[in-house]
Image 1 (tube, rainbow, N blue to C red):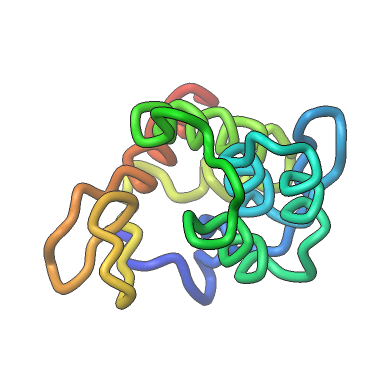
Image 2 (tube, one colour):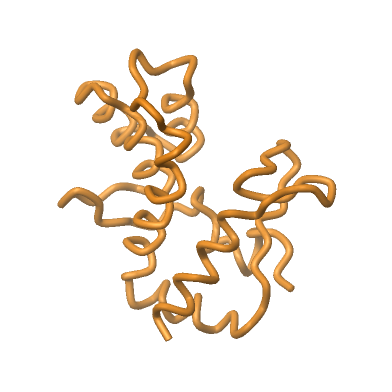
Length: 140
């Protein structure tokens, strides 16, 4: 089991600074792409895309910061994340690294209590890990 996306496995994290082609643009990270999809306003989306870091993109994409968030975001977020991860791992170098994880279970262990995308204190759905394993299988 790969229990956490740090160190050698930091490439699995959406916060990994690695260019991603999204909406015919090159963004700094998968987090930039994912957070940008929440915005209904082009100005907000562009601000997220231009954020200096993935953490800044996440902050700008928060429900508190955005003027308008896509209606029914919670129903759409899984599909958006799947599309973002497919785009991220279309890169040959990242694709190779993902395949090198073999059949290991990928668990997005975190300390910030995200129990939807990851697992905190042994509790969580690990949806990001499941998407990564699905994309790994698709690549095979």
